[in-house]
Length: 351
Ligand SMILES: Nc1nc2c(c(=O)[nH]1)N[C@H]1C(S)=C(S)[C@@H](COP(=O)(O)O)O[C@H]1N2
Ligand SMILES: [Mo]
Image 1 (cartoon, rainbow, N blue to C red):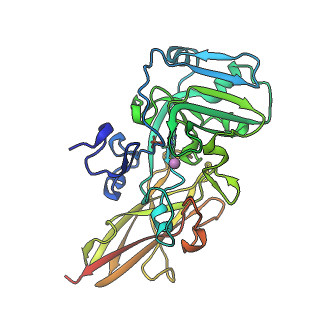
Image 2: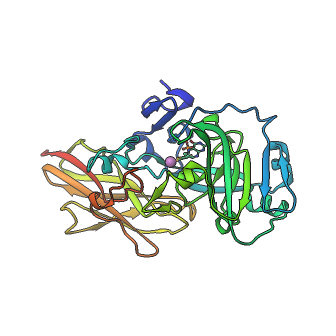
Image 3: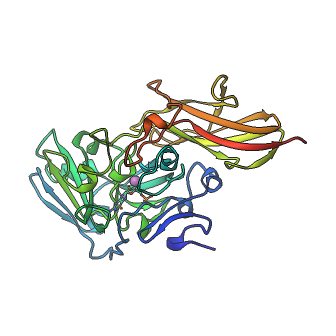
């Protein structure tokens, strides 16, 4: 069985219109490169089904030469680059904050994140071709989908600082995992901003504007803010994906696996797992490092004693930042950036 948009039949669907869904922990745990049918989807409005032959990207603002590019222009006039990057929604893990105190929004578990190979042109190359006219500022993106949850309803948009826009990893991507981008992931072309919250990776992008100030779009200026600050780089976080939370397992050695991610190119240096609420930590093995922009899978085999066992995990990044223990102090009205320790509970049966 498949869910809409070619997704796996066992996706956890938070909303069918607009379509919002995340994979089960088991489906996400399967591979370090997430297959497209298990890749979460976050939409604020209906999916626009655009004709790649008539789609145009307009580049405007603080540039010397305004450009209007077709898909063929983009593909023929610029070098193609491939970046392996993890996408992560700012609302990933919101369910844990909702357990502290209710708030509106989808109760995302920790599956609103996934990793893919993205292929496209560098945004920096396009801006350079347009005769970039400034060294400071912001680059704004807009798309034709009308977000119904915006006030007032408006096209989806975002912006990133010019310095990030000019970095090698930011793409105008038309392929995902070697295939043409699917409609639900932003076909024909989306922005990919590795290391930043997913909301900055605008799908179906049709306008790029170089500006002095950040975008005034609702999703930059009002939503996706925390403590008065527009969210950008992702804070270090992790999840336990297997065994699934609530599983019954046999006592003895059990292999526990998950992912760890840190934003803006900060690598993961360590993942630790505790069976006693953080008194004693065991160091997990890290999986392959596919790129500076990708999560790390991790795994550890521990002897679980019979009874009810709570497993916690925390990750560390290259700045020696780690995750906070509790969700309560992280609570915020929009439910963003929950990077508290990952927790699962198991019923461990004596053999
Ligand atoms: N045009 C447009 N771009 C968008 C969105 C959207 O609703 N419309 N959602 C954003 C959010 S909040 C996230 S987390 C990512 C999700 O990308 P995915 O659906 O490909 O996983 O897309 C971002 N880009
Ligand atoms: Mo998001």
